[in-house]
Length: 180
Image 1: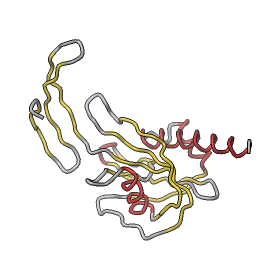
Image 2: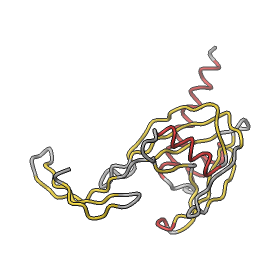
Image 3: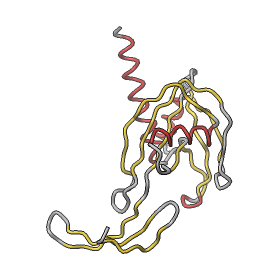
């Protein structure tokens, strides 16, 4: 971009000052973080339990409940990232994948788009955690996880939205099976 002054060019984020003309014709300089995006997985087993990670996040000030997720590494597709992260962080692979759409995490200053997937038909594989990841793998009843969302025990955005969209997809699938 010719209208971008690079401030920081890191491994995960790229910060710059961008000169833009807004729809109201005002010219502004905006601080914009460019990010390659990520993918997150709602992995549900045959007992209707969801795989949640309790992960230490320094930037957030401690431990968070999260879905298996990670940054898209070029030239990966979001689905490939989701499969890789499910294996690396949770030691799982899945036979069935369903897209739950995508969303912008913080569009006020960042272009990060996260892609959500529902994974079923789970089976164990060797995990491959990174040294910088401090993760505990937990299995929660899906309804319990939804209650954790409502009560504020889960406050990670991708996890909240992923669980809510998975709930809608599962309810829709259940309603389709009942009408057959």
